[in-house]
Image 1 (cartoon, rainbow, N blue to C red):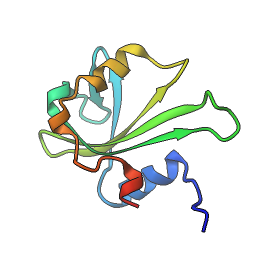
Image 2 (tube, one colour; image 1 turned 120 degrees about the vertical axis):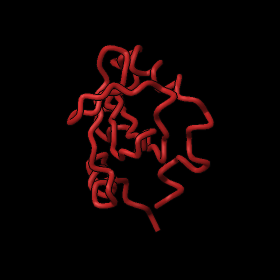
Image 3 (cartoon, helix red, strand yellow; image 1 turned 90 degrees about the vertical axis):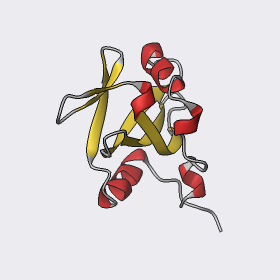
Length: 112
């Protein structure tokens, strides 16, 4: 049986329904909570899950959806573009998150 590929918005909705309602933006070298404006550093972020997505019609349309919990128990999502048009500073920020802060099975495909 062929599994239907989900789009980022499908996963965002799924996790919002599970309480991951905060939205995070990357700005000034930190991950910013769009509501509280608190700027999180890499060691304050825990990656619960992630999903890589490549656009069906445009291979350059690539992104990673991160499902995040923070040191202060906030839960939310962040969508990171990657590939030729990626923001290198933002990508480096996510590389700086300690490996210990990633869930053992962070790949969302293992969870669905």
